[in-house]
Length: 268
Image 1 (spheres, helix red, strand yellow):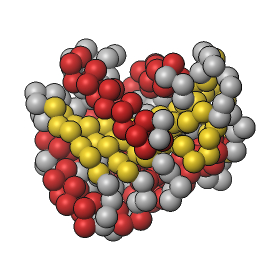
Image 2 (image 1 turned 45 degrees about the horizontal axis):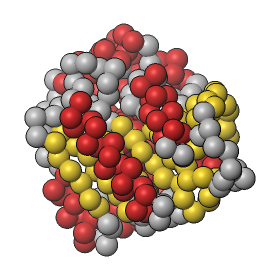
Image 3 (image 1 turned 30 degrees about the horizontal axis):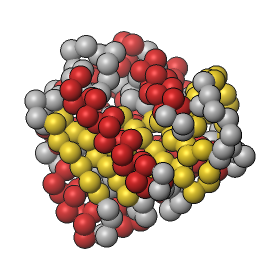
Image 4 (image 1 turned 120 degrees about the vertical axis):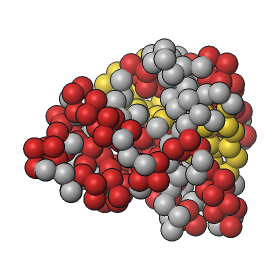
């Protein structure tokens, strides 16, 4: 297996990315875009990309925060942002527009500490991220070792939400997996053309309590959505670098479900 940092043209900018290639180079291979949490494409996300490569996929983990957002996202800024979000009512936490409004109402000195969060929660920025991800999909489809009809996305937390947004933005996406991420905006769901898989923790009420509504909206739009909720599992249960949240049994089962889902959608 080979892996390396690369640069890929995004939406009006160049994105850093981590590319993991399978050992067996005869192709073409199916491909997966692995979309990171708020921490960026850290060692957990890179490990997930390598796991996909070991399964025979070409995997790319783009850094959507390349540039200004990366500079703003210091450990202190992330901690401040998490603390701010935890203090908001669940219905506000789920609504980027309301989060922006709450931040805008703060004194200037407090707003400055939340600048990174303001960027990440901006709905207009989400749309730009979705176009960046479309660029990743185009990059993969243009590779001679990728089967262009077999490009999927798998995202976690923030990246889970972006996996859903990519499904709305890219009619050629073959499949999308959301790990404990917000559902796509209701008005965008009818644009989805691929099958979707959602994996959630029962204790992650901020996200999981919204999934029945998402499932109903998907059904009304003719979108094929399958989801599973793991009893006793918190948010980020798949992340084995966060020992306080990781749940091995749920994570192992979720990985099996992802593999089975992709094999089905790819016809492998």
